[in-house]
Image (tube, rainbow, N blue to C red; front, side, top):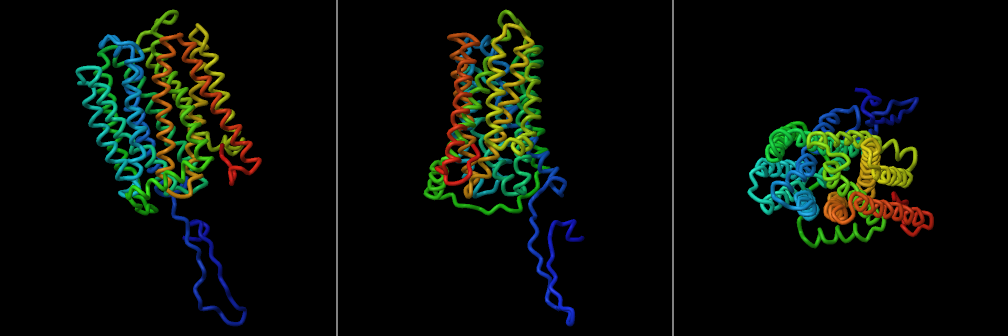
Length: 432
């Protein structure tokens, strides 16, 4: 195969009088995956399916909250714990899981996490009480914690840097498809057979995704085992938390997810009430707007190329805020358009911030990504709980108010990052 086809270069030293017998100097070719290269499609599809399974399981009860409230006789703020417990469990365990992935490998941890999570997904429909349901969901979220940080670390190690944002965008796109399909499927199934059958169907779908993921994902070629010693882990975490750029990215991820978690936890309650009065199947279909997130996450790399990371974050925040304000209308069309804008802004902002973390971390990438994911899912839990409380206290306007405060936080942090970059206080070019 020619050097042109492999990407390697050769340097031949020759004399016009005497042919050189020394071998040509051939720099080692970069064997990491790249779009169009061998293994890239399998890797992309495998992690896409992992993202589908993760989000479908993680948010399997979100579209069903009105039905869960009805069966157990509880308010929205109590039923929302079936979502908050899962995302909270993930937030708490993502850092320990990332440490295990440093020692035992990304693919091993991701496989084990999915296996446990899908098994629990098949048990969730049999929960006898709200307390048992919340407990099962918390353990399921903890199991799923092995996926997000390990996946982004796997990509950072196995994919060439120029293709990293695109690869992470595809993984995030899988998240959006999982979130969408889980909610749409559960909505229609629950309308006919109840919420328990609906979450059981999601469990079966997740099993299929998990099996395909394990078959398709290429074995890692650039992973180097790390240490499980607590002092080493603590030092790595301390290094990341002392980095002002990473701290800003963690806060941005948490704030974006606060908006998203609040909106999609409460929207089902709003649409069942006047003036909408929609049935469960139609409410589940509202989540088809997640397809917009698939597109915006996949386009994050191009967006950063045109606007820069900070410009992309400003655009994502402005789009999200516009959607929140539009959703205040009492007509279904502007509410749907508002959800489209909220979803597009959120997924674009999340893809930009999460890929920036992977690039910014010079060591302990799994821990850096884990800290981002922990902040991100803390934001989800906070958004689900506070958004539901705000809805109970002030209706949809209360939930929108919580979201607008979170977007204001994103913009403020990005402005501070811009100033830090200009004055050189960050010590290196900032991504946010």
